Length: 471
Image 1 (cartoon, rainbow, N blue to C red):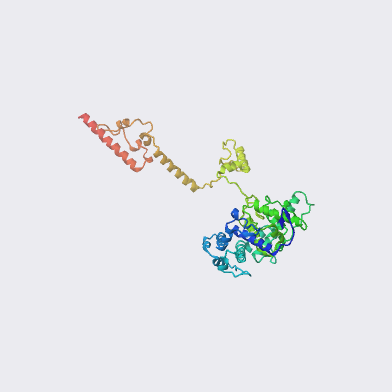
Image 2 (tube, rainbow, N blue to C red):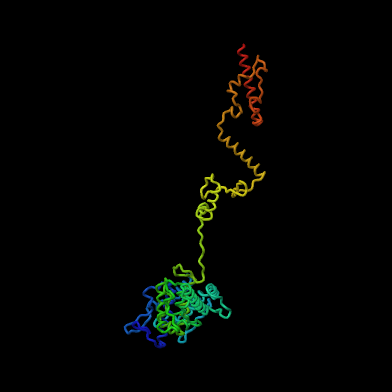
């Protein structure tokens, strides 16, 4: 018993054990009903009246009688608001559908009439319902397969004989393997620090819930997952741990749950863990379940420390600009510098995609990223270049008509017209052939016909004008 900062080692009476069970169970129920955000005025469910007798607070009394806390707990567990409007019998039927049977207490029957009583409140009946809710919570949050995968990740494979068969034994296996893994980590630290001669303290073996009474195993789990919040050097490792070591370790785990976790999952007192009465075993399993979920399944601690057995991911920065990677890469920059030294006339800068010269092939230039040229590809390339050149010339045509007709130094169009033979002049004096004026081979057939027609028309006009002058 803890009084005035001192712990009195003594045996607790049955009423004290019953009240300790009620306090831990109601605290757990309130935590689940309010999703780990229990109101400040309800964190302690009992108060003392003027006769110094502990009584349950009226608000908790009323919410237990109308099944409000049970509905809230199921709604949070399954994220289903349909549980809000159930009565006590509906809660019992919902538990039965999940495979959980509510045990009937020895001093009263488990009926709706008994559960709704408030004066006095039948605590034994309500404790049976809360106990069934604890079983459901452990069953839904802890699966044997998930625990085995967790244990195999950071420790040796579990043998067939050691494999758990239910969530309770799976939680004990997880606690045991965490202690062994922490011991190996301490040994590695001693080797790395050159303290191989220093002997590592022995960790107690965990085979049953009674092996948790010294607080070493639970604090080892916390230190393995969060060495920043609880370093292993702060754990009192006795061989075996004394009562003072046990009390210190239990206070250590309570402080860790209060300060390092975002919400307190330890609803047990120091006496509950030290004495570990059979009535409190289900509450201890719920405490281990909360630790497993908060440290392994859904980590609630914001820390850079990885979970045991998880390797750190290798992250490679990828640049969107390949040239920037060539500049930053030592091998790429070395390759570019060697290419520049082999060709001093090249003005390429590091990062530019310039051709590289192969010194063993007598000046043959290797263009990276280009295919080997063939006769077909060269022919197609030349045709494509000619077509592109013709298209560009027609689009940006600035040549004169004489340039297009191929007349170089032949004078103006009027001089050519004057040389056209007319009436009264012999045709031999100034013969005119179409091919002398225009290099017809370079023009299409239609264009040659138009030029010939134009010259014929000019020739007729000129003869008509000469004829008019004679008349």
